[in-house]
Length: 326
Ligand SMILES: [Fe+2]
Ligand SMILES: [Fe+2]
Image 1 (cartoon, helix red, strand yellow):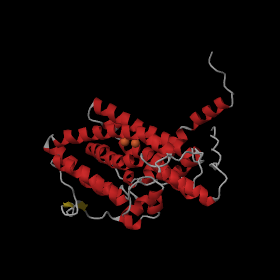
Image 2: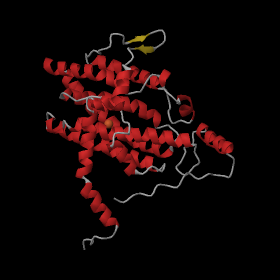
Image 3: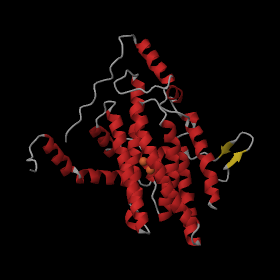
Image 4: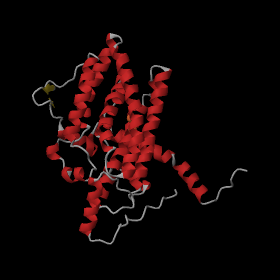
């Protein structure tokens, strides 16, 4: 397949010392200017942006898989159309995000290979099975909501190409959320069986959703420098709090309950109290031990092998070996 030539290593803007370059870089960020691919940047910044955006892109691809399973079983034609469009959007998000990673010099072939050989990370939440149609509603409403809360913050981050990609992604994610909310409202107002199905889905997905924001701040590494460089805009715990503040009332509004007996808002501090997700379980799932890790990556591998002829054809076209249609 045609390999895109990675960009040359970031150029320096002036021939200053390493400290001058760093001071200039930090001043730009403090002034809310964007860092562009050809600007000088510390190696740690480049690595961390690659890590974060690659992880995000992988999550879009793998996240489309559990929902994709349900396209054939959607209860109505309109639901099927909406779900198909959502899955298509998510894969498009991965395309955009992989292009962002490429601006930092990491080729797409390597990104894809790392996903296929199981060394790349993606969001833990997609390693759980969607058991019923209600799961499709909960995923599209609350997991997309969790993603939006995080990505609206990241949109203000310092790396120009990521920030611009997120403007479009967030716009599309907000449609996904409405589609998911509509499924949940329909079930919540439906028969007892539909309402029970929704409650059961919420019970099973709640802990993975809480874990979506990542480990508690106590165990997050690099947070301080990542926040100073506006790679990360808020800590994991702060983003989790924002999600709870915005969405717990909406969940209760639908007459649903949440499976955490500790969950409540402390009126004095204004903070939500909750049972910490099982971080050992989260680690185990991230490292490949979740219920669906092998299945998800297996399906990706199969799709990659099935697409081999397309890559070969594209490569042949780029080598001018094909006769163009007249
Ligand atoms: Fe997405
Ligand atoms: Fe989405």
